[in-house]
Length: 175
Image: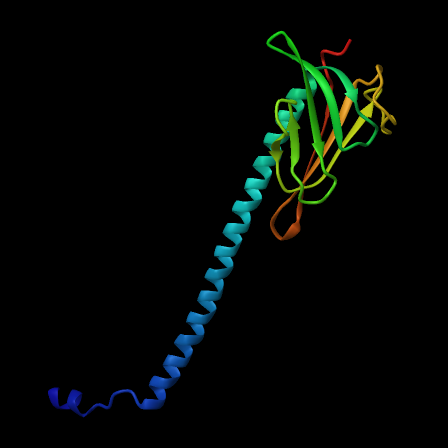
């Protein structure tokens, strides 16, 4: 039996080269799959951050608009609004504005500073004013009969794909 094993031949050089080529091809496709998985992970992570920022901004906007007591500047389908609300019993004036250029931040200003970034990488921001709950067409300007504020916030995500957040908010402290 020892004699038989000693007489057996090993792999030839051609067989070794073929095995190395096949192994290289398998490693190449495996690494491409891993790269794709890692790219997908980071894209998903960035998109979830964009969604979180958008939801947080919409929550803040809806809280502000629910508590507003008067609007001093607001046109139909506008990109900014100046409004008053009471905070701790004190009347304060606030401004929410966007620069109308894709990528500009949405700014929240309490007029004690130059504006604070509410959310960045905004592709579109639009405010619409409705005089009835079942209105489908917004009013041209804010009026004392306005009962709903429509908000559309579009943020830039991965590969310039947008995430759109919309809502209609009914201010509860209007006269």
